[in-house]
Image (cartoon, rainbow, N blue to C red; front, side, top):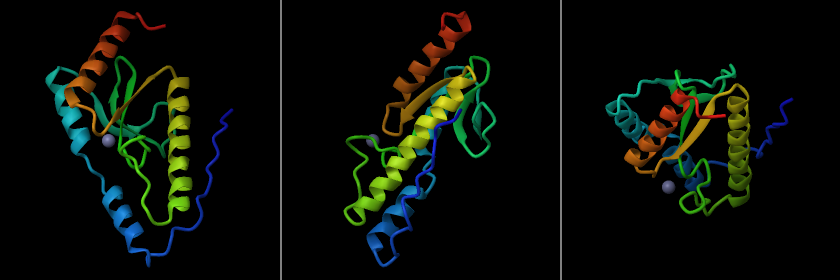
Length: 153
Ligand SMILES: [Zn+2]
């Protein structure tokens, strides 16, 4: 059974708080920079993948950024703000409580997404947007080779 429950953070703070609007706009924009760099690096290493597809397990409302079908690896590139990286994912100064609830909800959702993917026998790899693409791609390549050799349990 799925224990995940969405917790509503409450109504979005009024747009009067210009700061909130600004943060939302800045963060919501789909910054594909880190994803593109990672994909390019993976491609150069000879790895082939699908991009922005539904997670393994069929939940169509959740997406995987990079999917390596053969070795069954799902890669998600996480922005530091939305996914609460401890040092870069700082809460905005205004409406802190709302943001805390909102972002805690994202983290719970991430955990639930990982559980859903893992339950289908796929491996989840999460990469932070600030991770060095070569390092991240190297880690993924090693996992691909391990899973090809069948050394994973
Ligand atoms: Zn960061």
